[in-house]
Image (cartoon, rainbow, N blue to C red; front, top):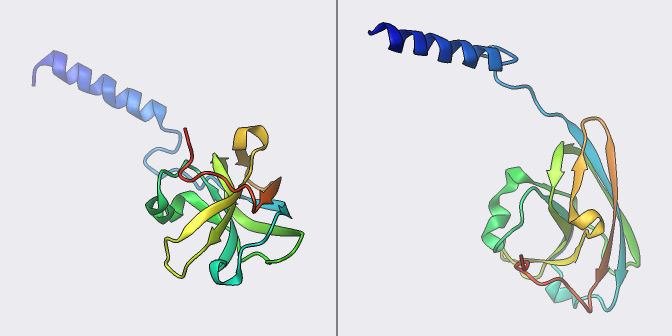
Length: 155
């Protein structure tokens, strides 16, 4: 191997090793925090046959169609929410830390796994919030069943 190539290889290897903080170990977990929320419902609730399920969903991406709902690793989903109430609360106790850019209340309107639509979005701070390790993030969402968000979202 020519001396120039060998020196270049050594330099590249040294730079690579200097940039690693844990050597060859995989990076540690980013940690988890919690997401707590309060929901206020306005308008007329959907008919019971078109309200299969209702949940808070936080996404690390902006969905373009319902098939994006299969990206479960990039989402946090609450347990089922109460229906036909004026207000409700939820908690996701172990949410991955990081940024969430599209979040809100989703309604499953048919028994089909992909039959979900947003009925209310988190809109404070441009709809973006973050979860820090070991901390709790609190958000408020207003759902107006007479004025639901457009889906897919307009960019």
